[in-house]
Image 1 (spheres, rainbow, N blue to C red):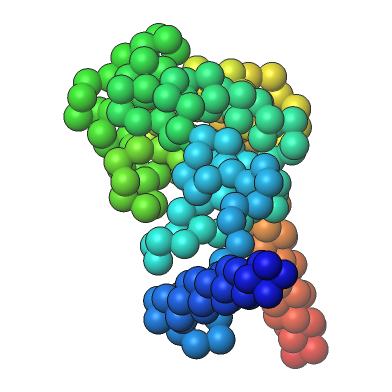
Image 2: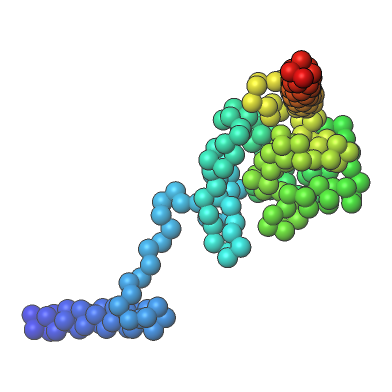
Length: 230
């Protein structure tokens, strides 16, 4: 009886070993010799493309992979408070919670801001900052709108200019309240800079005129000396 029980146990063990060996052979055939079965998803890991994953700061790359996107590192011209305000606005209109503002969400956004756009106008707004050509705005592309606004690169009659102006986000470095105030301050700064340059040019012209007069006086003095010498 003991011999039969021992034989039964050995048979079970051999069967288990053969099953493991067969599983290993199948894995090597699929993955290559020497590879180990890949671990499952790490606890708490976010699936690629999930809204939470995109909100965490990753952007799609042309090769299909993902690269880390840090707003504070890439958009150094804005303070952390400004970036938080922009992210808050972005999330407010990201109705699908997928990390993008699509054409219909942008349409709603512009209507809420009091600057409704035509279908073509909305498409042109996206196209101007749509670097990956997916016909929707990622958070990074949304930030590009405010970068262009701060640099004065947007046409005043464009939808993006209206978005930046009406969103009331402080995009200046002097702490001007509201985008409208920022553009007014920017225009004033440009006027002051122009006036300063004009003053410099006037001063240079005055110095040039004084130098010319001095030269003429010296020439007249030499002529007078020559007349006396004769």
